[in-house]
Amino acid sequence: MTLCLVRTGRSRDVASFERLFVYFGPRIRSYMLKRALDGPLAEELMQETMMMVWRKASMFDPQRGNASAWVFTLARNVMIDNLRKAKRPQFDPNDPAFVPDAPEPPDSHFEQDESAKRMRQALSTLPKEQAELLHMSFFEDISHSMIAEKTNLPLGTVKSRIRAAFSKLRSTLGEER
Image (cartoon, one colour):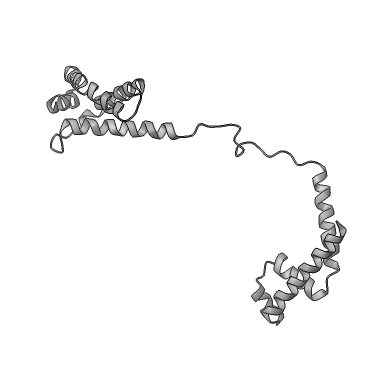
């Protein structure tokens, strides 16, 4: 079979390829069936493998291995490619990742504005030092240790004042709801 494969590769000899097909076709089909593939799929993959043998026969080097190993390597690769294609998920246009978000209801902006207004009012009830620390921490995105350095306060004091500010905000906002 090595000679037939070499002839097929060098001169596109159809008679040599026919011999290869008659010899390897049933063996490749059996190989595919043993891999738990159904009959029609095994037949299709055998045909695909033999077409690849026809196209790539010129790449076969008899000094690197025998024809059977080369052909079955192609068959194995064809089977793996088929399995990868089968595992690839189908495109679902109804997938939430592809469906645009629903438009915001008109009253959502009003609710956000009202919520922001309540938050500003609650912040205005805090003592000045607590409001400043909250502003630095959340609006200026400064770490607690940097706030301590900037204000010359101990780190524990900064943290306790921020905690106290949160507690006051919770009670103020909780009373309004």
